[in-house]
Image (cartoon, rainbow, N blue to C red):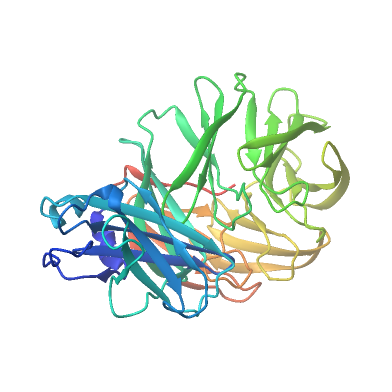
Length: 436
């Protein structure tokens, strides 16, 4: 992953000249991004210039609407994580890094950043620049993992634009795999669910736009027959849960989550045979809960388990959707691709490359047609669960296994999708992490 991605980030930069002797701040960098939903994320670093200034003596204050506007200010938490070039930029001066979040902020409200000395002139605010900060809007992300180094890298996307990109974690043990990308704490940012192939340990990391906020070991399942099959919201509380499927017995089990805490666990049902595979999750009846999409790999029958009930007392109801006996057709997506609030089914023919969309209402097929064809087998669909342009319709992300190109399609029901190459990664050790 090339560090040149930082060049795509709109930065607020400041003069490299040393500050006046009494000034707490010499130079620095600030970055801000806001989801199209609820949360602003801020990050940056500063050089502590002037006599007696240290990392511990500087804080950063954000003023929404400017100082004296009457809007509340927010003082950012001090952190030690820095941009890679921060040490050389500070020319030997101490550095301070900072990070913050604000929820339910108005995206159009101008934001000004100030440095504050905690020792000299306490409470005085020194502007970090004359212009307000304009955070970049982003809607969903692409997460990469390097299969050689274990590095994890995130790109924030706004349609076909990479808003910003940065390294967020390193896990050198490749026994640890990212197996889920749901929003586990309800902050409208996807988190990272890991499982260790060797030990069966399950680890949850809560993330923001720019960094990993916290992480915790949440469970251990040593049997490899139990696989994580989904990370939908099965109880309707706005937070992703963990769906398990035992490939040997057919048992299906759910862990209901609140961030890194398992609040309940329950056996949901037993598959009638091991010919049934879980293909995805989505809200097929519009009740705010994820349902379970399944297909019989012998007959081609497609059916739903509609999930209802409350915590600890969930139940499922059966619904047959259709039978597609041609097994060259594979289900590649389960989500709302038309914007009507009901999940649909996306298919690809592994021989011809044709992509077909079935629109559903309440789990019943209402329409269907081919929307695209890509016969080149090196083009693989890697994500079908993200909304990259904020229109409440799931989109499709493709990756070329030989060339490293990333192609994005913005779906709009049965209409011809708009598409564009958004990135090329020549190092094939970098792999896109699928969303489940």
